[in-house]
Every structure is written in structure tokens, then in C-alpha cells.
Image 1 (cartoon, rainbow, N blue to C red):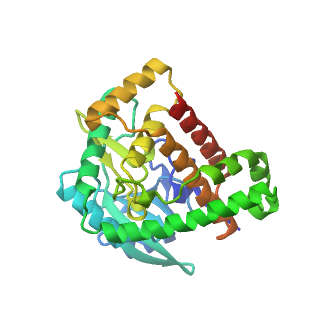
Image 2 (cartoon, rainbow, N blue to C red):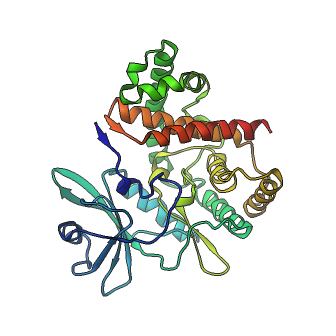
Length: 341
């Protein structure tokens, strides 16, 4: 059983960004190994976002040229599809942080790691909570959705999404069968958590529709609009979308992205109703139309993430922190409350 490292997720909870400081030194053997595959970085200064003793992580690289943001991951993904989608958005005037290098291969201790390099966005900040930022982000997302509607390579992305959703549908069925029989040992290291949340897992098994690609209006989209995947830069602020690895394995209605945006940017601090109404109005103003029904997608997103966590543990023997499991229970309940209000 292996554990997902903090360096791989970037932030302790993956989607709630901390200080953008790159305050950790990088072991010399690690920086040399990455520099050997990233052109122009030999002899540069390397700083890490999180402490790491191996190449997996996020790094700020300062050399003779412009600063770079370098990410090294054990998840290979589909760098060619990802780069094509980002280039398409950039050509369409959507604010993204495009690749300089994508899908460089680094062999480390018998593992094949993926290395990407992008411009380091000096001065960029995460969401501060302002209504102006919400309007700008919603406007950027609207233009992103418009640019990706009918994207020429959408068939390849839809096929990848279908394969993934079908697998997660099987995981849902496994969860339902085990939970309804109270066979908690089937969840391996998640057994105690599963037993404590057995009723919730049964509800998930009955309510989770995994085939997002079959829903009306399904298309390519970002897939994971949370506070760690958006940066704001300049004055007035521009919302810059980053981290598109989910974009090449998702195919769903745009309401999926809007549900993520509202839950992660408007509901994250459980605001009073009047404050929430102001935030939702800012999102609608930026997106240019009333919000569709998104509470159901909030719930589906939480069940989707839970299925991935269970699958990682049971089939791939990779364990995510239990706090992540509890987070998605909370997010599903929050989505249910939003749906019913």
C-alpha cells in the first residue's frame, strides 16, 4: 500500500491553496535529474512548493531566462491531448497558462515520471474572495465553454471519459454491494471509514449516475474548477485557468464546471444567505445567464471523487488521506442542501 504524497497533490488538501511561497530547497540530485530533461534549466535555482526528496512535486525555476513553473507527476495522463486543448483555448483568447514543454519523460528509481514546464506567473495570486474575481472567473469560464463546444479533438476526449466513467460505474456497483452486505473488509484500509459512513455509501450507490458523457449538452470542459486551479493576475484582475489534466478525461454538461465554481468559490466558507446571493449574482453576471440546476452536479462530483478514492485503495493499493474521504461526504451534503434550498 502506497500513500499519495503531499508533493503530488501540491497542497495538503489538494484543492485549498496555501501560501504561494516555494519555500523549500530541492536536493541537488533531484534538481539535476529534472534539469537533464527540461531544456535551459541547467544551473538554475530550484525551489519547491512542498518538501520532497524525489522529483515528484511543483517547482519554481529561475535561470538566465524567464522563471519557469515545473511540475513532475507520477500520473502520465495524456500530455498531447492536454497541450492541444490548451493551445486551442489560448488561440481563442481564453486566459490559460500554456505549456512550454509537456510530457517530458524522467526515469527515476524505476518509475516513469511526467515533466511539464510553463511560464511562472510572477505576481499571480489565488482567490481573495472578491465579487469582481467571481465575475471575471465566470466570464473566463463562459468563454472556455464556448471555445470547447465542438472542439475538433472532442471525440478522443469523449472516448477517454467514457472508459473512465464506465470503470467508475463498476466501482459504484462494488461499493453498493459491499455496503449493503455490510462487508466493510472489502474496503481494505478504508474499512473503518466505510463502516462509519455506510448509510451514505448506500445512498451514493443508488444516486450516482457515472455516465456524464450521456447527459444532454455534454462537451469538453475544464473539469475541476477549484481554488487551486485558478490564478488572478493584473489590475483589473484576469482569471487564468490552470491544471487541465482533468479536461482530457471529462465530457459533461457545462453545469459540471459551474457546480464546481459555485461550491468551491461561493460556498467554501458557509456564508450567510445574503452573502451567498451576492456571490451567485456575480457569477451569473460574469457567465451571462442564470445558473442552471447545479446542486445535483455538486452531489455527483462528490460521489465521483469518492469512487476514485475507493478504486485507488481497493484496486491500485494507493491510499489517500482519510480527511479527503470526509471532505467529499461534507461536499455531497452541502450540494444536497443547495439543491433543496
